[in-house]
Image 1 (cartoon, rainbow over the protein chains, first blue to last red):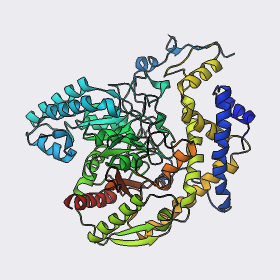
Image 2: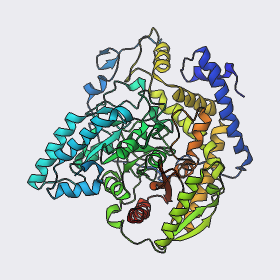
Image 3: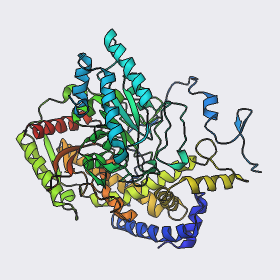
Image 4: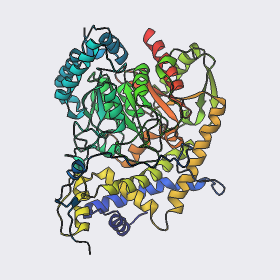
Length: 94
Length: 480
């Protein structure tokens, strides 16, 4: 069970602004989904290692050479905000 | 002669022999799209002017004897998560509705260098999150076999485009079944490559430990031709496999007699599988036996845990990946008096319901106090699922299962999120294990209206084997 208060808290962590009706809806839906996860408690995993990747690759490295990839102007053109001195302008954060 | 109903392999032969120009082929597809796209909604963006330009260039190469590859001059489509300099890339989301990528995805770069012609960018569930394209911000893609039904998802735009004869082949992405399930719904062939076989550089991510990019086409042979171009290591994607790329096309006709095909009891014992789907599996088994393959009963004991594991791991990775859509560097950012204000307004207005839902689940599963119970637990059970496949592939060469419990469902039929998640029951375990899988059309529903496919799974990097089996199944089906 996940309360509306918890939904509001998670939304805050995730930088999502939810309307009251969204909070209500997600609280119900998320509770159903979390219930569904309970079946995993049946599986014994005390001695099982975690899998975070499946390739078997380790320490993939490449030579330490500078390459120019992409174009600064084109990348800066992607921002919806003003650009000044090669930087995206945003509101003050401090 | 209707060029659009031909396979990629057939059109390639006509083009290379000078019997049809790339421009003629491209115009035929464009005419078909213009006639039928209004009903189907397979595309987010079409690029007809570009396609004509690229086709003319291919025709010059054909005349000069400087063809680039077997797919030179062949019109294709890309799922709209594959970044292209030539057209916007939206991920079917409002947050990227005007996004113009400054660079190409590696998969598009390779296709372009091979001479492929781009007809457009196809519809998907928003950021590939869904099994029906109903979560697209730009409307649902309808199934060309029955317009009241979904094309499946998330690569439903790509599979519908191939099924409707809008292109020779299309690129899709498969994280938990997003190529295989819509291929089954639309009666086309869809290959989910082994994790790491195809570079994901420049393809908008969903869940990074699971995402793959792969081909969708009419036949396994056509998929092999596309895979030949896009497979292989990419230094910009350090998760790409370093194993050699096989000659997929050449290996297609190697006989499959003596191959052992595993039939996992857990898949067929799952509740709620349609009788029509089970019958198609039976007829696939008969075809395989005729071809000399041996059917071996196997067990993949942790199958039932695939769904809960996936719906913890994938949303966790999604919640992290979606943090980049903050409205600052790209996308449709909103104005705000504070940074937080910009983030929240951008995400509230730019994200659809399923995206928000998955971000919330993931954030919850990763948050303090719940990490061990959800995320770590899921990562451990993932190990057991992977071990099931490792052990199975010690005794069998490939595995045969249904793709999805039912044929294409009616638009709006899966009304709760959990119902929609169950669509992925048979495709998710292979995604968690990182092995390869192919959805191959074999039969129809009893009323003959809806296509039904079968899924073949193979070990990591053995796309050659499942393409070969699928190809020979298709040869048998076609000769009946």
